[in-house]
Image (tube, rainbow, N blue to C red):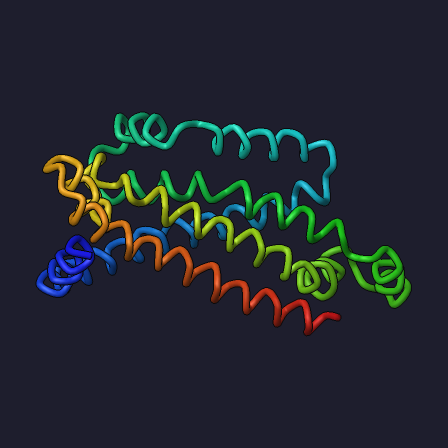
Length: 213
């Protein structure tokens, strides 16, 4: 009970700093996720349209996911130096797999009868993709985005190791000072961010499923 009171007092006293770190955390994650969407969705579409490229694209993004986060950031740091850029690139690479894979699955899961109906009405391949396949695959993409966001929020906690900000500053400071209070003060907001991202995106995913049902 004393620990909970101490933690609460610490978080209240340092609320301004924790809020600032939370905003930094959100910004890093947002940049990484947006890049992953910009690159990942087209890659998923290419994998779905050209089956010969699918193993290459999925394998490469899977390998990126398997590299330990500290090792990934250390490698990136050699090329991009310390700071936000390295962390954002790391988050982008870690977020690619769920987005690419779910985009691929979403495109492939569109009912063949719908595709044939579109072809019968004279739609071009591009029209089939933009009018039928992509809109119908959005629930799958949203599911991948949920996973990517949760991963990104967690990985961003080690940002201070490469000179980035975010809630990881508080966590790593707590580890250095052997302070459970500081560790929890950084970990709790990060956990809340992950839960909120999952919950909000889950609601949008559900709405999209209902829309196309």
